Image: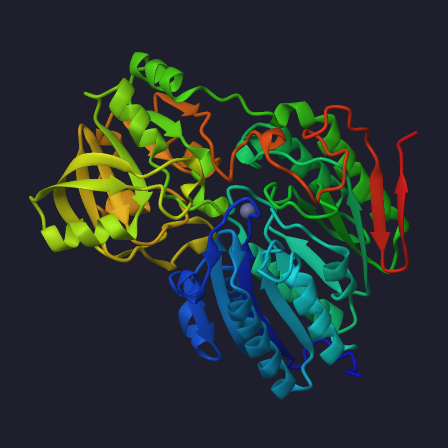
Length: 514
Ligand SMILES: [Zn+2]
């Protein structure tokens, strides 16, 4: 057993990051390349890669430096989002992390940054599997975990760590602070100042992401404020997880996790209170969408440039980013309107590179990785220019991280500038467009493929319209072919009643509100 250290003594912590956001409605299997195109680093290269970035480990590295702690990096990677991760690559990552931990024994604590929705071809709970193995190796060593606000936090995860927190903000611009907070909490546990009691509460509710913003105004701002108000005294942290709403897995639902010092009664009440605040606001999370033709017509009547959100093809939520549906709608309903769209399509990107700038060619565009929503769009295109193969994120959970777009080009199709990249890219702001030499604001329409980040990235737009398009990240959650979730679940089932499912390390129970 590791003895509690006294404050001021140098402590050695192991840190690692293994993040991926899965989507069971996406057929895309994520591989090593998908992880390497964001970051994939081992041992000391973790520090070189992530120090100075806005990632969780970027924050943990700075926190350790300010506290005089000794850090041993294990591995760090973020695979972005997709369907499931290949079983073999998942096993390789888990083995690499566990082998490094085994070689380290003993350490004073372990901090792991996980997404909380890592699913593989073999498991719907890779995070829980990993933590169970880490706990088996280190039964008495403090383990602190941080997760994305969209984590599907399972009891297996909670049972195998000492404290679990999460991003408090969406858009996710507090990953760095989450890493600092997690390492500080680990230090407090290791030196005996925090005896963490972990409780969670879950309600039968999932929500689309469009109204989950945590700054400004909106229902999630109020839920966050409630959690902040209740974080006092022995209740050291309240994390709230809106949940990745496109994972068809048991026990899916809005979840809060409270970490308290040496008490559980107040923590259970606080976790329940935040869940209740969310439930009371559930109707405000429903999303109004427009048929593409209607959205485009409304956009043409609006002044300024207009955002068309094709959120059903959100790379950051697990879709392939290769949908050409919005492009087809623009060509049909606004053929003269300048527009910008990003489509991931490695075949067309290679063709463009072979043909060179200025060439004209007929291409079959998009809808390749996920053919469920139609065939590729056959169009005549002019290659405006070849684009660089990478860019650096300017903010959010990837701030400072280089994204690998692969071979890329800008095509002119009708009046539309199409950024075609070999790799799909998580969309924070307009970094990918700008890397391709496209200023979205110079166009009447800019198609975005995310449910939230565009709301601040294009806050100056004349209108922001959400299109009713098909895809694995649709905001219309009731329309998805659910099989594994526990029913009833709001809003999939209209007649869902509120229940509070509680968990503490000792027991799990369900209550209906009185
Ligand atoms: Zn998230």
